[in-house]
Amino acid sequence: MRLASDYLEARGATLEAFLAAGGEVVADASRIDRSHRREPALVWWFYKPGTADHMIADHGHPFHRVRYLGGDAPALHERRFNQPRDSGVHVYFVRHPEAPWPEIAADPSYGLIISEGETRALAGAEHGLQVISLTGVDCWHRKGERELHPDLAGIEWRGRLVYVAFDSDIATKPRVGQAFDGLAAALKQHGADVYHMRLPAAPDGAKQGLDDYLKRWGVDAFHALRQSPETTPAMSDADLFSPNIRAHEEYSVAELLGRPVAPVEELVPGWIERGIPNFIAGPGGVNKSRLALQWGLCLNAGANVPGAPAGSLTPQKAPLLYCSAEDDANEIARRTQAICGALKLQKPTQGQFVICRGVDTALVVMKESGGVEARPFYFELLERLNAIPGHKVVVLDSAYDFVRFAGHAKIDEDSVNFFIKVVLQSVCDRGNCTLVIPWHPSQAGSERKSMDGWSVAWQNAPRRRLALSAVKDVPDTYELSVVKRNHGAPVDPLRLRYHEGALMPVAALPDDGKLEEARQAVVREAIACAKANVPLNRSRRHSDTVFKKVEEAIGRRPSKNEVNDWLADAVRNGELSCLDGAKGRKAGYYPPSSAHELAREAYGASVKRS
Image 1 (spheres, one colour):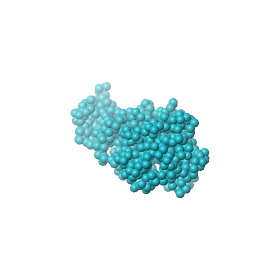
Image 2: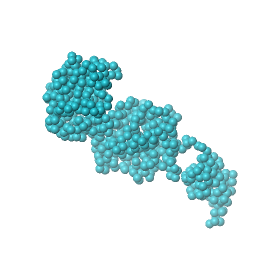
Image 3: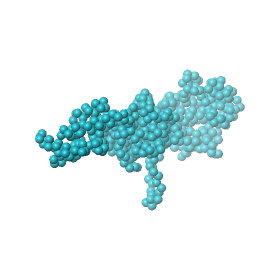
Image 4: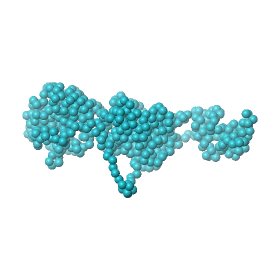
């Protein structure tokens, strides 16, 4: 009991109040649950507000947490607090005469304080404060959800003053700050007036929680802090993104001329710039999502990306976070297994998939003229990213699943600009990541090489925008082009073909000899046509015999584009000559040794036929 009493009194509470609140002191915590260590501990039993009924854990037993009393310096891997595995999350409402919870929950004229840790609630009640304690800064919601926890949802929040008083280390822990932003946004959506109460560090610089503050300075100092400039309204949604709206900077010409300039950083040279949103534009059905996944898996494995303009460089490595709002786990698994098999990628030790089909994945709601409302998934995404060390590559599949446009915001330049340049860039900056985002252009834009549409801002706001389009008349073949590369030289388009589940550069595909047979069949037929005075001509429809001969060689009918490519190869190889039309000479493909003679004969034959 002495250990328990000393621990509580050091934090502004008493053993008597702890026991009256339904707590228990045990000499061996493992007797409560086998997952606990064999040490003395405080057992915090959680009760439904205003009752003696236990909250029930996910595994069906009364919910509790223990605080070990074996000293304040546990081994590196040991926890001071513990709860049984798979017991879930609950919110702590202290049983105390100063906390009539049913009345408080129904009456929004009561102000509330939200803190972290059970002793904060007990110490607050001892000082006449109504404190709700979370078991961790992220525990205002259930795992995998972003709505308020059901324990909190029963409170009437509209019009209520809420002071969030997390420990003082919020100033040095970005993850805690992001948890605060998420909680504040959720409370504001329920109508609460939320304030950020910044507790100072202890005089020696150590972390200070609400219980420590009350013990050290008393409740009057707490109320003075609550009313001081250190306590501010939680940021509006527009203010939330203000760190990414940078003030202008001024430099002289001489300063810029003397400034050391670092090279542009790229995760995939020529295609993906590091630390910004990168868009892959294209109509439906051209495998944008598969290409984004393929690049992400290559970066996750530290492998070269097939066909990259500078593929000989040392490959980059970055953990993948793939957020799929369009496909289920089975489809993502099929694609992932096929790509890893086709590219022979090693089994990864990092990388995550978030399958969120059917879930609200909007980061924000964009309103006309740049108005913005942050949504829970924005905070969940940042929370996930900051739990992964290093720089990440993030695929958001696809763009319109991660933003909701109100009214005509989708075609409003201010709204689109703010979404791309501020909201998405804030994810890159705060989450230390690069975004790759498949994006559907408008129907009219899909027919243009630029793959644009909806608003000029969709074309101008991204600093890196790629286009993926199907190659006409060539099965399973696509052309990847760089439409916009603000910080680099133009990159030549690349043809990709769907092969064994991956998108491979056409030039890198394995050749079993059939394509060479097809090319030779086209050359033979071109020579035969030239000798028959009906030469093949790139600008005219080829004889059906050409397609039949190739189909016999490779087992499928080729496209006109493929035939033209093989003819062009034959000219480069010196197997054919391509003559332009002129007086007394018919345009077309001919054998080099007799090209001009045959061209004159073909011209004469055409004159006779006419």
